[in-house]
Length: 112
Image (cartoon, rainbow, N blue to C red; front, top):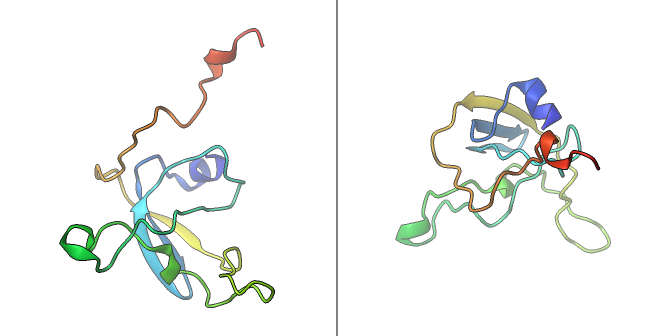
């Protein structure tokens, strides 16, 4: 959230995540569990083509990753790609949350 604040990004804003290998756009979800200057994006929620209901839904971050793998396991080198995050628009209503707030309010822990 601190880095998002520095970039002028608010929850629900449309952001572009770009690397030398590609770019995706998605709504921003701010999480206090992400390290400063780091970005996390779920894999498996975006489809270019996948049935009439899922085609062109979400964003697939695999197209942004460098084509590198871990030598020992062969798994994708998830943290080997540097990306640039840019706010490209305000909220468009595409961020749907089923949970409550993702941030603790400072006034909820009085006396602790």
